[in-house]
Image (cartoon, rainbow, N blue to C red; front, side, top):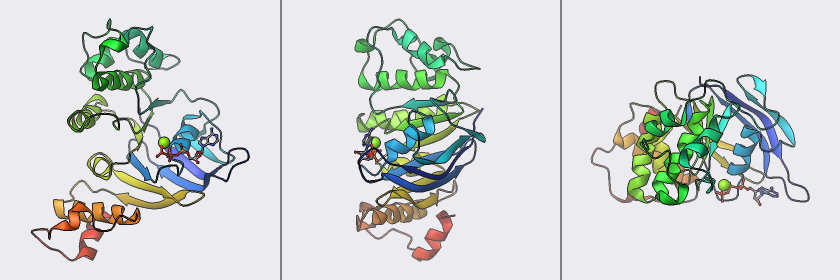
Length: 261
Ligand SMILES: Nc1ncnc2c1ncn2[C@@H]1O[C@H](COP(=O)(O)OP(=O)(O)OP(=O)(O)O)[C@@H](O)[C@H]1O
Ligand SMILES: [Mg+2]
């Protein structure tokens, strides 16, 4: 069952260093898919760790389903850029770790089937390809039936084709009752393709700089405008999308209105 995430006025400072995050406010309704974008080093992973309860904010609060996060939260699962499977455990035994402490957990066989790894339960991590290992990591995350799925550049290490397959597979594997998702990515197209909402983190210390809603009915022209707009916010001028005139040229303001909430 998906759970809401509410981040209120969160700041994070590591000892002896300049503050990383300040005044971060974000309300994510249950079941929403949020893509988190921002320059390297701006604090995206730090924010995910605060939501997961792997680290504590210096001030402010994180709530999941209205309840404060205090300590590593069993309602969250996290997927990292690299699979982080334990090499001395079989795939099945790795996936089983994800179900620990969880209520409504799935068996390893059930989740392995959902990520297309049926029959690989007895294999060892070193026997899997990079894409398969990342699917096993996703199975481990889904095994606990999380209310909130956190992903830190989950597809970044994969080749372009595997990456596209993984994006589809994630949507399928989450099933009829998808969790709330916060996915960090550097890939604007991936964000547009997958997310309901794109949140841009920036500044020093970093806060939420922009929130773009990706409407389901957006046409290609509208998505091109959104892509250009986001790239512009990163200081990347004319993106590839702007290189050629689109076949149907609408007034930019109209196009933006079509996609930005
Ligand atoms: N445990 C820590 N101790 C001290 N400083 C830290 C710690 N974790 C992160 N930082 C600092 O916080 C800042 C943000 O780091 P973070 O990993 O959150 O960035 P990021 O947005 O995920 O970057 P990237 O896109 O490169 O992964 C960096 O300056 C980093 O050095
Ligand atoms: Mg990071």
